[in-house]
Figure 1: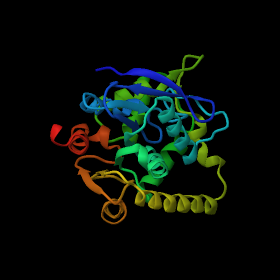
Figure 2: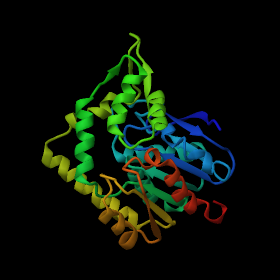
Figure 3: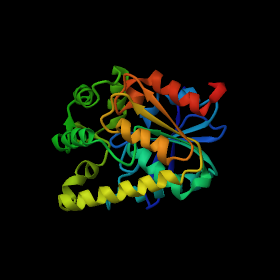
Length: 290
């Protein structure tokens, strides 16, 4: 099963790229995390395509979506893009599946437009992020702010260090779809270098801390406003979503939620254990049909 590519206008003039796996049924919009792109869902999408109109979005600055020349990459800009996608594709209600950054973006969207969300799968994402994972991601970004590669294999080697539990097929796919060829023949990331350098352009550490605390409060509040059923998926070895935060989300904050912990998976649940991820999500979105 191969998806077709769509391009739609984003919120601020640029175009967004989506993969469409099927055209019938309630829409299901898959939203990836920081540094990934729509093909991160390739193992999962065929499982639900017979039942949903499955769409996978490249967030602005990622994959084949346009870069923002003004580097507008805050949460509100991504939320505005989701609003644009819903409007352009004529979507009244959809199931949202968001991983990491995509999970936070979908959370804020769902709180602002609860009537448009038929169900919500939050994949290893939450209001509070484990410090271990934040340090790991920051070190990776700082070490490779603007990486270039002589061939795809070089990028695969870098990805294998960043995603130590990912299947080789997932690493190969991320490398295949994450690169573009420069005029000089070198391979570079499709991801906007402004995103990888974002931290270097931010104010002092206290301002960054205050911003994150504000976002945490907004996200906790947003989770409490969800009207739909929700599934929180956590990788058992995740260094981003702690067990305590996941439990609080499900037991205390989200009105109608359940938790699925996927064994043999870290933060990137869908690449680390595709079968476990598929089974957990299909049990939620397909029920008896799964």
